[in-house]
Amino acid sequence: MIVQTMVLKAVAVSSAAGWLGDFESWLWDMIKKYYNALGNFWSDVIVAFLKSLTTVGLWVVNHIPAPSFLSTHSIDEFLGNAGPVVGWLCSVMQLSTAMSMIAAAFSFRLLRKLMTLGQW
Image 1 (cartoon, helix red, strand yellow):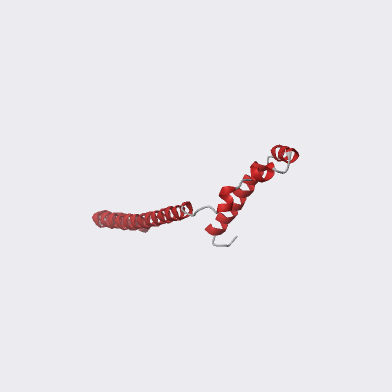
Image 2 (image 1 turned 90 degrees about the vertical axis):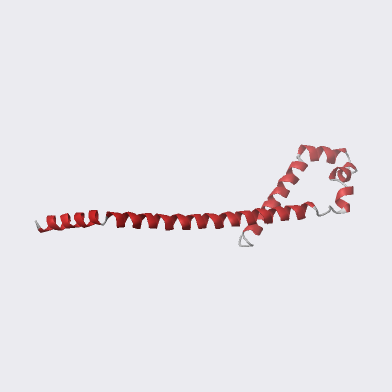
């Protein structure tokens, strides 16, 4: 009986102060929305900064001139003088594909080192 009257009093108090609870929940929702919007804003600022940083980095890399010894010679030129057996062996062993895979692996390793600041 006593528990039942306490529950009724609690219900009466909560219904009497309903507008205050509504105001409190509305205010708490506004505060949560403000901090969520602030977090989203700063994450967008960081993403935009990183995008512009990578754009500048790519511009710099694209404007580095290739060395003259790379632009005047090719692997075909060097291997062409080696004879027909070496040319056949390079085509059978797919030397160009192997070199491109090695270059891709090396590039991936350097990029991973750069992204993790040398941790790996």
